[in-house]
Amino acid sequence: MAIDKSQRTAARVAGFLLLLLMAAGFFSQAYIPSQIIVDGDAAATARNIVASEQLFRIGIATDVLIFAADIVMAVAFYVLLKKVSPGLAMLALLWRTAQSAIMAMNGLSFLTASSVLSGPDTLRALSADQLQELANTYVGVHTAGFNLGLIFLALGNGVFAYLLFTSKYVPRPLAAWGILAYIVMAAGNLATIIISGAEETAGGVMIHYLPAFFFEVIAGGWLLFRGIRAPAAAEPTPARG
Image (tube, rainbow, N blue to C red; front, side):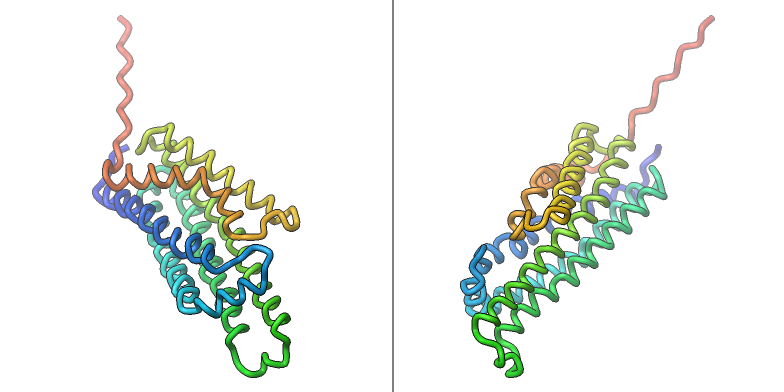
């Protein structure tokens, strides 16, 4: 299958965004929560949100930009892989778009938590403890939404990894690792929905993302710096005389 210029460009765009968005995601989805959210301590979490409200909101804004760029990356993968299977490439694109929409809207939970703690006077009818617990509930809703979004991410990227495996555009062992990694992510995050209380923090949810993290680092670097390769043509079978 011949590779055209648009596919080569799409591969490098996808690789660049994989690496960029992972770095940005570490800042907004791992570093900032680790500085503010205290597991099992609603009062400490509330104090941290109030004390570092600007940082908290910067993380939310960063997430919105990340998930907008996620759709650009998904389109790049679609352009790269639609020749392999238009239907599956479109399915993966739609799953990734759903993931981006869920996670972008999920930022409302963090915004609400911040507003509860520093919002209008109508909330002053509640005690400090009640406000802290209410804010912590919205933090928990954010974690649940993040978990749900990762399932759609795993579905979409799992299909993209399968198409990379089928196309042989990247080394097959790398694509196979991606398929396995996203199966682990989908299964792990589905388990957190089925089992009540299985995950309490976004950091815990991220455990299921670790195999995919390593795949995305390697695949992102490969697509950006090495690009894609055309599958080797099968050698003709010698005629029998």
